[in-house]
Image 1 (tube, rainbow, N blue to C red):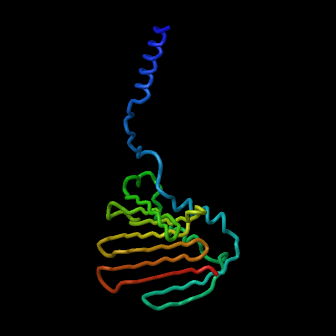
Image 2: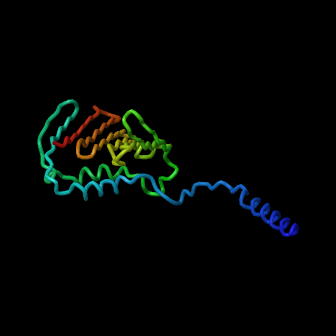
Image 3: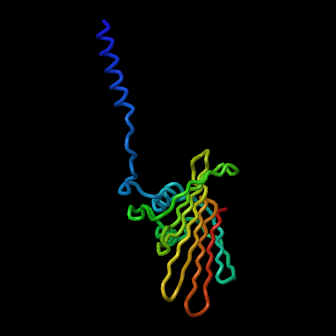
Length: 190
């Protein structure tokens, strides 16, 4: 009986030693996964709200002079707006490890902000911020900054989308020669 007790105790120690062995930490596999997809989000918004008869106020400001009009969401040329946003998409795996990611929890607004900042100044999309409601999990807004620099011109765009509230596109051009251009197009859903 004592002999069986020793064998069981020895097996228990061996099994415990094997089970408690420290595992090597896994390094992230940068060939898997992607960042947030603007294209997928836009497609989802299109499927959700397409055909809804929203009325929008459009404000266009060019170099400080503003013009406004009202337009139906059905008559609006969405393809031009989508193309501006699609250019900023960083979901392709080639962008993995090219952005610093920060997850900010904001207790005052009960939201969470995912922030992507470019590590390299020559990347087109310089900043992407997605604010999400903590309770519903829905996106509150998306803010994007882009920059394209050439010998002749530096173009900066700032994009803001708050679902079914505001869509804003700001474009700043600083040419090597001549006067700069500031264009702001804002759509407010009524």
